[in-house]
Length: 134
Image (cartoon, rainbow, N blue to C red; front, side, top):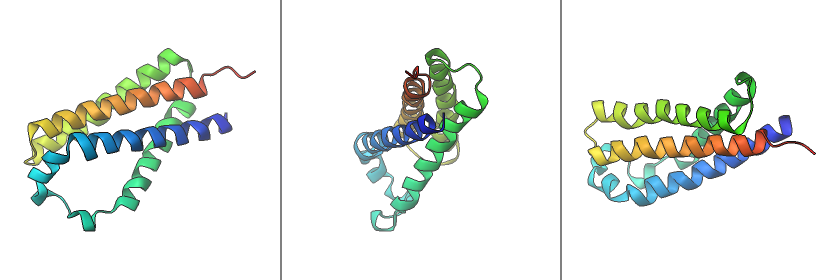
Protein backbone atom coordinates (compact mmCIF):
# COMPACT_ATOMS: atom_id res chain seq x y z
CA UNK A 1 0.00 0.00 0.00
CA UNK A 2 2.96 2.34 0.59
CA UNK A 3 4.13 2.11 -3.04
CA UNK A 4 0.61 2.76 -4.35
CA UNK A 5 0.23 5.69 -1.94
CA UNK A 6 3.46 7.30 -3.18
CA UNK A 7 2.40 6.80 -6.81
CA UNK A 8 -1.03 8.29 -6.03
CA UNK A 9 0.55 11.31 -4.30
CA UNK A 10 2.80 11.98 -7.29
CA UNK A 11 -0.08 11.53 -9.75
CA UNK A 12 -2.41 13.85 -7.80
CA UNK A 13 0.37 16.44 -7.44
CA UNK A 14 1.07 16.43 -11.19
CA UNK A 15 -2.65 16.52 -12.03
CA UNK A 16 -3.33 19.40 -9.67
CA UNK A 17 -0.28 21.33 -10.90
CA UNK A 18 -1.48 21.06 -14.50
CA UNK A 19 -5.04 22.00 -13.61
CA UNK A 20 -3.83 24.93 -11.48
CA UNK A 21 -1.97 26.26 -14.52
CA UNK A 22 -5.11 25.97 -16.67
CA UNK A 23 -7.39 27.50 -14.02
CA UNK A 24 -5.15 30.29 -12.74
CA UNK A 25 -2.79 30.84 -15.67
CA UNK A 26 -5.33 30.62 -18.47
CA UNK A 27 -8.98 30.88 -17.36
CA UNK A 28 -8.46 33.52 -14.69
CA UNK A 29 -5.48 35.45 -16.09
CA UNK A 30 -7.60 38.46 -17.10
CA UNK A 31 -9.39 38.49 -13.74
CA UNK A 32 -6.05 38.45 -11.91
CA UNK A 33 -4.78 41.34 -14.05
CA UNK A 34 -7.98 43.30 -13.37
CA UNK A 35 -7.49 42.84 -9.63
CA UNK A 36 -3.69 43.23 -9.60
CA UNK A 37 -3.85 45.49 -6.54
CA UNK A 38 -4.95 42.45 -4.47
CA UNK A 39 -1.97 40.22 -5.34
CA UNK A 40 1.80 40.27 -5.14
CA UNK A 41 3.52 41.41 -8.33
CA UNK A 42 4.65 38.41 -10.43
CA UNK A 43 8.28 39.06 -9.49
CA UNK A 44 7.36 38.67 -5.81
CA UNK A 45 5.20 35.55 -6.16
CA UNK A 46 6.39 32.65 -4.02
CA UNK A 47 6.02 29.94 -6.67
CA UNK A 48 8.39 27.53 -4.92
CA UNK A 49 6.24 27.78 -1.82
CA UNK A 50 3.12 27.28 -3.95
CA UNK A 51 4.57 24.00 -5.31
CA UNK A 52 5.20 22.87 -1.73
CA UNK A 53 1.63 23.80 -0.78
CA UNK A 54 0.26 21.72 -3.67
CA UNK A 55 2.51 18.80 -2.73
CA UNK A 56 1.47 18.87 0.94
CA UNK A 57 -2.17 19.13 -0.12
CA UNK A 58 -1.77 16.11 -2.40
CA UNK A 59 -0.09 14.16 0.41
CA UNK A 60 -2.88 14.98 2.85
CA UNK A 61 -5.59 14.26 0.24
CA UNK A 62 -4.21 10.80 -0.54
CA UNK A 63 -3.34 9.88 3.05
CA UNK A 64 -6.77 10.83 4.39
CA UNK A 65 -8.23 8.32 1.93
CA UNK A 66 -5.60 5.64 2.55
CA UNK A 67 -5.56 5.89 6.35
CA UNK A 68 -9.15 6.74 7.22
CA UNK A 69 -11.46 5.40 4.51
CA UNK A 70 -12.28 1.76 5.21
CA UNK A 71 -14.09 0.85 2.01
CA UNK A 72 -11.54 1.30 -0.78
CA UNK A 73 -13.16 1.14 -4.20
CA UNK A 74 -13.69 3.44 -7.17
CA UNK A 75 -17.14 4.59 -6.05
CA UNK A 76 -15.90 5.54 -2.57
CA UNK A 77 -12.81 7.28 -3.98
CA UNK A 78 -14.96 9.34 -6.33
CA UNK A 79 -17.40 10.29 -3.54
CA UNK A 80 -14.45 11.25 -1.37
CA UNK A 81 -13.05 13.49 -4.12
CA UNK A 82 -16.41 15.18 -4.67
CA UNK A 83 -17.02 15.86 -0.97
CA UNK A 84 -13.45 17.07 -0.47
CA UNK A 85 -13.85 19.33 -3.52
CA UNK A 86 -17.11 20.82 -2.26
CA UNK A 87 -15.60 21.52 1.16
CA UNK A 88 -12.36 23.02 -0.15
CA UNK A 89 -13.98 24.77 -3.11
CA UNK A 90 -16.73 26.50 -1.17
CA UNK A 91 -14.15 27.80 1.28
CA UNK A 92 -11.71 28.93 -1.40
CA UNK A 93 -14.22 30.39 -3.81
CA UNK A 94 -17.13 31.75 -1.85
CA UNK A 95 -15.38 32.10 1.50
CA UNK A 96 -12.82 34.36 -0.15
CA UNK A 97 -15.54 36.17 -2.13
CA UNK A 98 -17.31 36.98 1.12
CA UNK A 99 -14.30 38.86 2.53
CA UNK A 100 -12.32 40.11 -0.49
CA UNK A 101 -13.35 42.34 -3.38
CA UNK A 102 -12.76 39.70 -6.05
CA UNK A 103 -15.01 39.36 -9.11
CA UNK A 104 -17.80 36.81 -8.82
CA UNK A 105 -16.36 34.98 -11.86
CA UNK A 106 -13.19 34.34 -9.88
CA UNK A 107 -15.09 32.90 -6.91
CA UNK A 108 -17.17 30.76 -9.26
CA UNK A 109 -14.14 29.38 -11.10
CA UNK A 110 -12.21 28.84 -7.85
CA UNK A 111 -15.13 26.79 -6.51
CA UNK A 112 -15.69 24.73 -9.65
CA UNK A 113 -11.97 24.40 -10.36
CA UNK A 114 -11.34 23.06 -6.87
CA UNK A 115 -14.31 20.70 -7.13
CA UNK A 116 -13.07 19.38 -10.48
CA UNK A 117 -9.48 19.02 -9.21
CA UNK A 118 -10.59 17.06 -6.13
CA UNK A 119 -13.04 14.91 -8.09
CA UNK A 120 -10.34 14.00 -10.59
CA UNK A 121 -7.97 13.46 -7.67
CA UNK A 122 -10.48 10.99 -6.22
CA UNK A 123 -10.63 9.26 -9.59
CA UNK A 124 -6.83 9.00 -9.64
CA UNK A 125 -6.83 7.57 -6.11
CA UNK A 126 -9.44 5.05 -7.15
CA UNK A 127 -7.47 4.00 -10.20
CA UNK A 128 -4.21 3.63 -8.30
CA UNK A 129 -5.12 2.60 -4.75
CA UNK A 130 -8.09 0.41 -5.61
CA UNK A 131 -6.39 -1.34 -8.53
CA UNK A 132 -6.15 -5.07 -7.94
CA UNK A 133 -2.59 -6.31 -7.53
CA UNK A 134 -1.65 -9.22 -9.73
